[in-house]
Length: 136
Image (cartoon, rainbow, N blue to C red):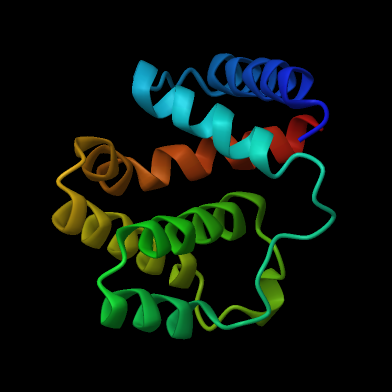
């Protein structure tokens, strides 16, 4: 990625501003994860994929692939936080439920505590992203 440092810096600034605005403060690990997540997708015009989330989740579960589970959860976090294509959602909490489940399954599969933290703080992370959308 050509402008990685700039994307990370900008993402960090956005996260800090949203935390201050909402008076919601993330742990260092979750904050760092969200910064990297935003930076990775900073220059992408659209969040992937065209494949339905339920299919992605099912494939990741069948393959027992924690990386795919995390990618699916990340997509859900973006959709939920930024309210992407909201009128097409099956229900108002669909992406929250799917993302929480995917992070939880990634934790069980990998034993990486960060995914457990993301599962338990999905709504808070989504709130931060929602605030970034309003501030932008």
